[in-house]
Image (cartoon, rainbow, N blue to C red):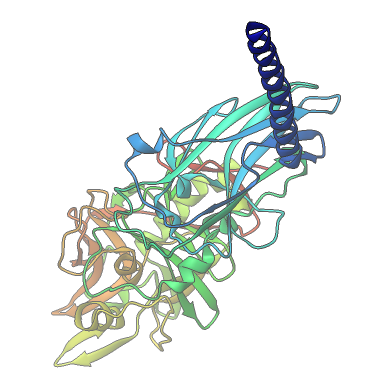
Amino acid sequence: MKKKYIFSLVVISIMFLFVLTIGTGYGLWVATKESTEKSATTLNCFKVYFSNGDTIEMKNIDSVVNEEGIESSPYTLTITNICSETKELQVRLNVLNDSTIDTNALTIQAAGNIEKEITLYKNLSNTKSTLEDVNQSKLIGLASIQPNETVRTNIKMWFDEKKAPNIDKNAIFKARFELIDTESSIKATFAENILSNIGVIESKGNPNVNTASFEEEGLFMTATPNGKIYYYRGVVNNNYVKFANLKWRIVGVNENNSVKLILDKSAFYQKFSDKVNAMDYTGLKYIYNNETINNVVSNSLNEWYNNNIASKDLDKYVIPSNFCNDSSYTLMNYHTYFGGYQRLVNEKNPTLSCPSNSADFGGNYNQKVGQITADEIVLAGGSYGVNNYNYYLYNGENFYTQTPADYYNYIANIFTVNNGGGLEISRVDSELGIRPVINLEPSITVSGSGTQSDPYTIDMN
């Protein structure tokens, strides 16, 4: 009887555990199902499942080395094409306006149907978000998905300890995934692409231009009578452009949203002027016997532009812009000092506004090609009398600016950059490099991320 009682207890216990297991399993299945359904959304032709939702929020953030970052848990996106034709999907990561952390150290890696090697978020291609409350929008990758096909990608993100060793513990990172059919996406203009983080740029204030810049400083903004100009300073690794089969660097964005480019290497070597014994020869143009004369460098630049851009049907992408050849001056003890000398040698106070003057040479020229000013060299990170092998305008060459320096002892001098990257003064009849500068039309769009291996390229009409 006792054995029969014990046997009955065992059977009852087993049945209870079985029922409990079924109930628990059913509960887990329901919870998983509800969680999956909650994280699912339909976007036009795509059914999307987010493993942790489409919104990311991080607090008390610690930066880590990349080896630790790649071991972190991924955000998994599972995407099914529910339409009857193949579609290309863009996966973007939008940093939201209420995110307070500096994203320069944000690092991304993607694996699966979308592959992205470890890269900094700032080096991803910019996009124009269709959502509100977005500060920055970047493209993680593209996926071509056939009808009824399901693809999956794992996205990991962390803050690189080498880029940001001391993160503010009170800072918050907020971001949201955005998935969009490429056909229906609105592409950002080149300027919008560059200025995708405009709030951070404008909050930085002015850089210290009293010395050269040897570090990565990024973009800055300065106000002019005509609006705002944005310019790169210091070490820059994402301002490369391929245009007219030539390599350029972005100097900045103008008031009208045109993008200023300078050729990465000198197009040719020559004199600024054949003549040196009058201060007029520091001008791109000057007046002689009541006739306006193009200086040697002006004629050569125009010829180069016609041969390399206009003749290739690329002229429509370049707009006429103002090129400053500041010929304002003061005379002291038979020594003529141009405005640039006072600003850049004596005061360390560069400007992007062109001073007015009454000279019959130089001034502000509205044309399609010119050269960089000495003021722009200083804003980019150069400095008078200081070599700098780090900033983005250094290329190991001696090259001209178009800013007059001084006139003394019947010698006209102009600001140049030496092969050590420092700003100096040279005679206008010196044989030095000429680096053409152009400005791209404001409405153009581009592809690429701006790195040396993946430069921006213009989307041709």
